[in-house]
Length: 263
Image 1 (spheres, rainbow, N blue to C red):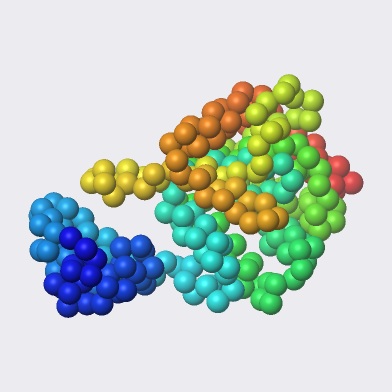
Image 2 (cartoon, rainbow, N blue to C red; image 1 turned 45 degrees about the horizontal axis):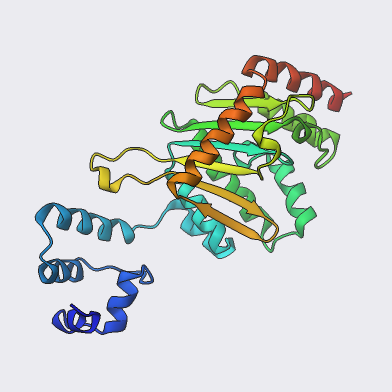
């Protein structure tokens, strides 16, 4: 059946149907879903799933109040982060946002060119960090040692940032591990910073979100979700963990660096 025929049968324009089929429509009505299901002979179980998805598409996430100050890529990332059950990240230059204190984040933003509303950015950061209090969410932060020595915002800010890392690292759902500069060769040396996001299993497997890898660079961002790509980054994470300090040794290192910044 052609798109034009299907659209005519449901009394809508072919362009409207095209936008629905390609995900370019911001509003999906239940009546439209039902009409299309009737036309295509969709079974009851699949119809229920599609109607549920139509309902979910009309809901705004908490981050929508910040959208005026968010680029589309950032909005997508925050949305994924907000629904992930586990986030594993490898960082070679700066701390991941979920571990940053406001002063640290402000210094980064100013170095990049201060945004129009840096205070709104800080509020967004603090709102994102509320996920760390969720026992159903796990953060695994793998850090190159250089991240701790990169003086962002000055020694006073870095000393406070180290104290914050020690505090957050006490949470049962947060793991912070450092790869020393003298560690043996590992895959993290050849990978850009990345974030591997895993999502909770839905009662209906069809609705379970597949894992996503987020890779950022000066030229833009990539969202990878092909099975081969996910397995590659899972293997990279495992190899980084192979050479990383344990959590206790990481705490000892952070404590020593905090003293250096505080001296």
